[in-house]
Image (cartoon, rainbow, N blue to C red; front, side):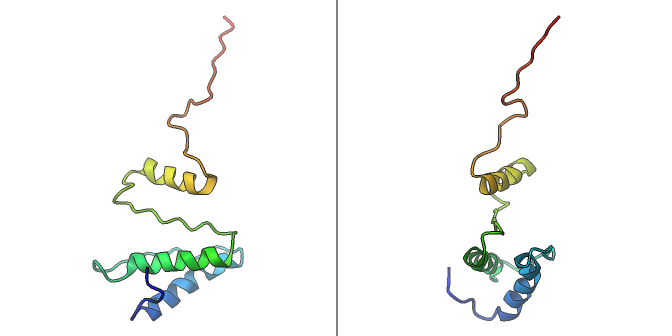
Length: 102
């Protein structure tokens, strides 16, 4: 990843403004990043996430490639793994015990 992204100062500044409230324990702005292939979208986000990790432990930036994690379950599992440090249960019945007193 480059130290600086050429010709993307305005976009990076806008991203910083969108995330700035989160650094002050407030709600950040939802942001949709669109653009042609190979224009710096992923690199910009990864650079921003690196800066966030260096500035605070109160925010957990998570990058998920949705071409690899392509279902809701896979995406939520990745978020779970990054936030809690372990994979979620593979089913909703892990640790489930049924007692029948009939």
